[in-house]
Length: 206
Length: 206
DNA sequence: TCTGAAATGGTGGTGGACTCTCATTAGAGA
DNA sequence: TCTCTAATGAGAGTCCACCACCATTTCAGA
Image (cartoon, rainbow over all chains, first blue to last red; front, side):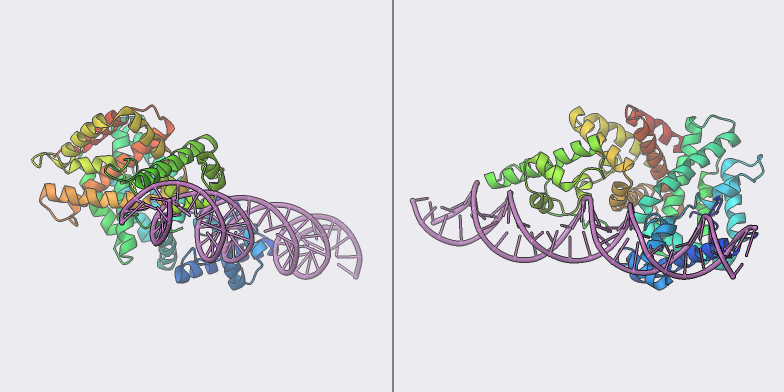
């Protein structure tokens, strides 16, 4: 559910364009570690996987793992910010109603992501929703997304973010997304975009 | 740290009526431990409080703490059924619309709880929402509440729980509750009942 | 009052995340 | 090629939740 690198220093997948060999190696190491971690988590479970195993798989020392990721949780949650939809929401036509804009943003965003990357992201999100510990770790991200959502809706509706119409709407949207994520965690083959769209449509009565 | 196995035998607060001295003592010990734990968590924070400290405060051995509570998290989360509103929803007039029934249930429930107990519950919920680790531990409770909510709404609407109208509605309700809990965690003096009622009213357009 | 069972305390131990330090290696720039 | 700095590895160490075992105390029932 999270997406959008949007971060400063750490570049996940892209090999860091204009930088030196050192930088490129760093990025590569980081990506490598995270990749092996995710693979192991998926295969054996999160709790059952130790840092040592990850280090071994990635062919680095445990110290190095901690140098790149402050905590075990960060291996999954990383620095990654918000709901990817939220980012795209900003660019939607201001004339659209909040819900319509969001639905449109979802459609566009999901369509745009290359399917390999989408699958990877999907697996990651699946882990987050599935492992309570990780869900906890990303709670901060989630709530900040909710806040952003509220803010954007407020702008679109020309009301203050504290206004009950805004809060009710963004809360409702959030809940529907949450519910959908749960469904999705039970059935990874669910058509996420379609499901979200048709559920959100129920809020679109204004 | 997987989800708690949903305890069976443990009776929380009620002193176990017809039982022997032994039983009563057990209940008392359990309540005592939990009480001190919550006090310490509130005072020093969850992570900063160790089992040893709790044991000392409650004047029992650390072993005993673990005998009563399988994990540290259980000291807060316990087996306690979650959102109290859900329980009360069952008893509402079937003729009412889902949202109206829920709002009514909330009003009734909150009114009925003795204010001391309400405060205690409030503190507990505050902890849960505040400490990610605890939020994670109660995720199971939360999602099961969502499911129950969905089921009850489905009955009331005469539709299957998979129906999108049902899912959209219960998701939305859940989201609003979640949002309100967050607000509440920032401002513990918020009028929870009133806030919920007025936000939920926004969904009541059918 | 005696006996068996349950509750408790204490002690020692384990696993694993995370920290610190220091020596070694590899890249950057001259 | 030589130096300087950043990245890595290795090892020892800490902390704390949680477990296992056993001795001791406390209650129940006869």
